Image 1: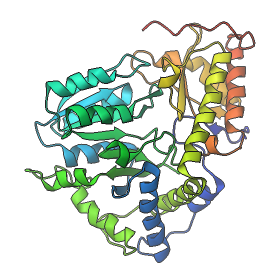
Image 2 (image 1 turned 45 degrees about the vertical axis):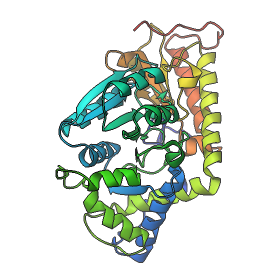
Image 3 (image 1 turned 120 degrees about the vertical axis):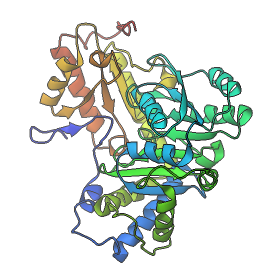
Length: 392
């Protein structure tokens, strides 16, 4: 629970962590060849397959941030001049498009208005118009809290452009939102350790399909990266899974210990229970937002993420007014980052143990937010009259 000395971190990542994860992250210096670490690393690789729903997808677990996953996908899969269709629902969709262009892709951006996502008919039309090497979609864009229809996008790709690789940015979604890698036909999932996977920042997690790996093997040009090159990392991942250490670059030992501890808890609960817990927690948050007379940035319930919620503020309040008052009540929330609208909304994370454990974190956060809104002059107690979202 929040105290003056230790505020709750309720941003959309990094998230609060369990005591077991914190303890695993605090172990003494350990060689990356130590049998205890080798076993933990092997368990992480195996566990990640279960989290995303794949039997033979290849996890890459590398020291770095989620953004390194963008580099991995772009550098390994895309050759100079190839076409990529980016479904952009906010700040991170635009960032992924920029990353693809950095590696020579010819990018077509299919943008949605703030709070919305692309209609599948638009996606189908774009795929019919041009041959794309890959399509990218952020399952949850952390700037808006909008949930993409990844299953629907995969179906459209199968129907209209089956050769196109499906790349999912799951940084703010994996282990909170349902994703069936094999069943839906996903080729790459990009995520990171510090969100719903429930451990400290520092690990870039990517899962690649066998089709994606074959694409790398079939390249006509060299992979234009050293550290992000899957041909260098694949033998390392295979060796650790076989419980035989192999070296390319030093793994983040303590961070992997911590991730393994979190994955054990997630898998002990079972993925269906984990997803259901996130759904219940998100519903509680949305009910609170409604009771405050405010609107989510996601324009309708079907577009709302179960991992985080972005909330439009009343016209009289800016994020810079609200966030210090929340901090004074022991809760750290995030401001907006959507270009041109950042001051108009704030964001709450509710993933990982905040969603799956009865620790009171979300209840404390909602109580603090209601009180902070009242202090800013917004009469939360007089619910029933909902403020419209701002005109964009």
